[in-house]
Length: 380
View (cartoon, rainbow, N blue to C red):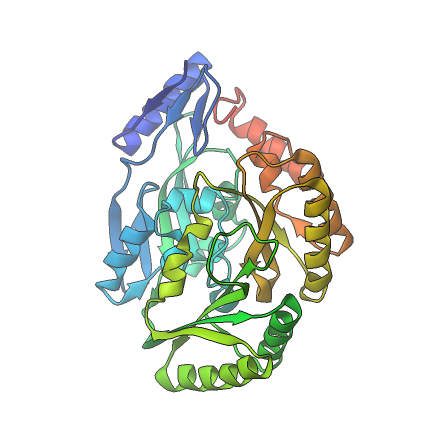
């Protein structure tokens, strides 16, 4: 029977992995293993080791909750962008990088991986490998920081993260709008892009007739936030409001600072007993309207209750299910439709169900795994 252990320090984590490697005993982290393994719980490794305002870098352990980190940084007028919204407050820093979570504010600030400057990884042998550093010159050449911290790559367990910080913006404005249909919503976003209006984030939730989300609202819900200098934010909102009226959008909320609507929908990126966040898709903007139709046609034909949400302006879509056990065949059909439309799947569903990735990069990943973890003790 598997047992759970909570290392209290990095030295304890090292000893645990060294012992497991020596005895050829499997250990699991960020996932549940079979009956014959040890599940490593990193929740006690939750120290914010250092906040360095001069270099805009924070050094933290993997068990630090993003909500707690955001609160601590705000006291010094700083922020870690992936933790700077309500959507990931309950996740730990380790979960954020291991699960490959997409930064909600990547439309303006870039991907999550660009906010990782360095790390300390405990290898399956118990040795510590340091990558990157506080300054850009320390992350030139081979990018071992992102290599060892790529989603679902089990080369070792990261025990320290060096996170890139930014100052808190002068002004923030949150907006929630509903459009009648997907065509109006996509036209609205197209106008925003053409006008070079860049919200900090733009998150879409499908509340149409086929939606699995239980709510009093309907249509296509968009939650946006603008941040920066007051004049800049005011001008962007003024122009955005023109496009909302053009496509007959209904404004639910305009507020300074924290959004009530975002707070309500922050559950989207959390694990619940009502649905499973199963697969993530990268889709060309011009193909999204047609894919929307295909998705619901296939769901109806397969009698699967599923919906879409995500970051439409960037083409990042998420599939969410009303039940905890989606059908393999349906997922495969959807991924095929995505590829035919010129998009790609993150492969998250395959990872979660234990299927080995395919392709050249997957083969290189497998070779690296053999070299760094020859006994395959970590997440066997």
